[in-house]
Amino acid sequence: MRIVSGIQPTGNLHLGNYLGAIRNWVRMQDQVADTGGECFFFLADLHAISMPHTPAELTANTREMAAALLACGVDTTKSVLFNQAQVPAHSELQWLLNGTARMGWLNRMTQFKDKSGKNREGASVALFTYPVLQAADVLLYQATHVPVGDDQKQHLELARDIAQKFNNDFCDEDAPVFTLPEPFIPPEAARIMSLRDGTAKMSKSDPSEMSRVNLSDDADTVMKKIKKAKTDPEPLPSEEAGLEGRAEAKNLVSIYGALSGQSVAEVLRDHGGEGFGQFKPALGELLVDTLRPISERFNELKQDTPELDRQLATGAAKARDAAAGTLSKTYDALGLLR
Image (tube, rainbow, N blue to C red; front, side, top):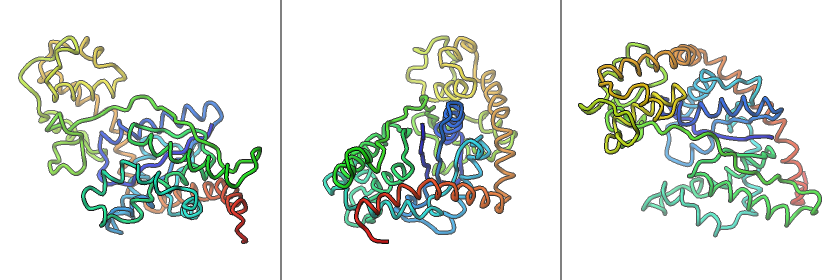
C-alpha cells in the first residue's frame, strides 16, 4: 500500500486542524507502516498560489505547517514529508496530463465554482486546472490509496479518469504507466466548532482569539479560553438527545470525546448532570495534557528554520527519486524526445 496525501500550508494552526486532519495523518502513517506500506505527505505550496497570496507568508506558513506535522507525530523514518515546490516533477506531470484531461471534466468540478464565486472570469487559470495538479500529485507516486473526505471524492474520480484515459491512449494493455488509486476512508475526523459560536467551524480567520485553541497556546491560555467558552446555563444531559439545540454544549462534549477517545454518549455517561463550572476545568486539563508536548515541540521547531528546511529537503530528495520512474515513462509514452 502506498498512500499519498497533501495539505495546504496555512498559518495559525489550531485544535480544529489537529483533530480534523493532522491526527489522522499520524494514525494513518503508523497503520500503513505496520503493514509494510509507505506514506507520502506533502505541503501543497504549488496549490496555494492558485489564489491571491503574499510570498513571505507562504514561505513562513510552509515552514510552520512542517513544524506542526512533525510536532504532532509525523515521523520521517516512517513517512516521506516534503513540499511540492522542491519536486519539479509535480508541475511537469501536470503539464503532460493537461493533454489528457478534458475541459468538460474540469467544468464539472464544484470546488472551482465554489472558490471562484461570481468572478469566474477573474479567477486564475491555476484555480481551474488545480484538479489536474491534484491528479499529478497522486499518480506521480503510483499511489494505491488516497485519503478522501466528501469534498475531495470528485477530484479522486478525476485522477482515475485521467489515468485510465492515458493508459488506454498511450500504453500497451499489459503495461500501463499509471496505477488507478483507490479511496482510503480515514477514521471519521472530528468537526471542531468555534468556542464562541457552536454553529461555526473553528477557524484561524475568526477575529476573536478566544474562538480557538492554537497549537502554540500555553497551558494558562488554554485554560482561560476553555473557561470563557460560550455555553448555556443548563447542566450536561446524560443522553445525546439532550444536546439537541445546544450547539456550544455539544461542541465542548465533542472536543472532550475526541481527545479522550470516547463517544459523545460515553462522555455524557461519565459527566451527565455536571454544570459547566465542573466540566470546563476537566476539559481544560485534558486539553493541556494533550497539547503540552505538541505545543512545546511546535514552538521549538518553529524557531529552528535550518532543521525544518533540512527535513523538507531530505523528504524532497526521496520524493524526487520515487517520482523519476513515473515521469520518465510518461514522457516516453507520449513520444517526447529528451
